Amino acid sequence: MAKKTTATKATPAKAPARQETMTLIDNRNGKQVTYPILKGTVGPEVVDIRKFYADTGLFTYDPGYGSTGSCTSTITYIDGEAGVLEYRGYPIEQLAEKSHFLEVAYLIINGDLPNARQQAEFEDSITHHTMLHEQMQFFFRGFRRDSHPMAVMCGVVGALSAFYHDHMDFSKPEDQMIAAHRLISKMPTIAAYAYKYSQGQPFIYPRNTMNYTENFLHMVFATPCEDYKVSPVLAKALDRLFILHADHEQNASTSTVRIAGSSGANPFACISAGVASLWGPAHGGANEAVIAMLTEIGDKKRIPEYVKKAKDKNDPFRLMGFGHRVYKNYDPRAKLIRQTCYEVLEEVGIKKEPLLELAMALEKVAIEDDYFIEHKLYPNVDFYSGIIYRAMGFPPPMFTALFAIARTVGWIAQWEEMLTDPETRIGRPRQRFAGPTTRNYVAMKKRK
Ligand code: ACO
Image (cartoon, rainbow, N blue to C red; front, side, top):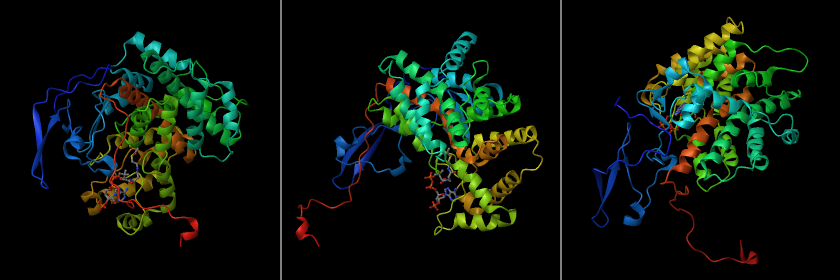
């Protein structure tokens, strides 16, 4: 891997000197257009086509943005071919082993690892913003008991904008920081309340004596009837999962947050949009879908049948938890999550977990299959995480809510980076129009 410079917070890296260019010829008229090639610190270079429409009258066409860089970022680097993931230059494996979620959150938001004082101040601020405005409880009560937690989170996270509007000048770093801290602090409380409400149990208030992940587990699983002791092994495992889910550069939900925020929208509303995007089964909702798929498969004997279905172009079925837009190799997060599975299963006393055995057998069959090899389809972050969450006692509809807690850190860091980037413009893609050309309005009585 090429050597990189250390990323720092401030504004995204300035475009380096434009030395190299790309020339394109429009074969319709022979016109040549030349565009600068911008280098990053590592990874593919980008062609700066901002003047392309003005020069040619053409739009580029890239549904799904497979070849489009939408911004300059200094936060997360992925090498999908090599299976590399780094936050601010630090390999995910090192962070998962040596760090903890709030330290990683500080790193992602501020650009560098904190010193002891910075970490203590940050943790103190996050710990002291975990309570929700008491009136927000009425929001929860307005939902049906069987509402999906992600539906509740979309609504309640957006509603934060109505409750916390005392620091709303988001051009000021201080107001950005307050919004960031509020979101990171309150997301676990919102997710825990969504769970409690679905169970018909009383909400458990946050406890400032516990760390971030312990406090979340306590809010989810404690009841007022008896003492609940948080297992340090489970808290550590969940904390590691939060680290692994904290950011992933310009994925669907992050791009949603950025594009929503590019209009100057309220950050709580932007993060609510991110939650909505994450919920989809092609994105963060895959962790819930994997458990549903494994339960449906049910037996190792049926694996070939489902692998065959996944390869059949006439069948919409896909192996959930497999494949990724960027990783064309094993997702490094999936490897780390698979290791964590064993620790969690041992802690909760599950000697034999049929779903884990089934998942591993499915992975083995799939990664040795020509179709999956040719298409470079490997297990992604969502393939094993549900097995851990289930063993911890979370019902499948909560899985994506856990993802949302962790990804809030990435969303908010990317939102702040977008706001402070002088090159940011309102996100506004164009289209190839293929609808009817101009036609005259027809009165109702003359329509067929
Ligand atoms: N099972 C079977 N075939 C697959 C799968 C899969 N899980 N994923 C991709 N393919 C095939 C496609 O059919 C396509 O084949 P073709 O080229 O022969 O037509 C090819 O691989 C490329 O697939 P695309 O959908 O074009 O790839 P894209 O980058 O757009 O999609 C995605 C990536 C959405 C993750 C896809 O792999 C998928 O649907 N996976 C299952 C859902 C999932 O696990 N999502 C979680 C992703 S991680 C995250 O977001 C947190």
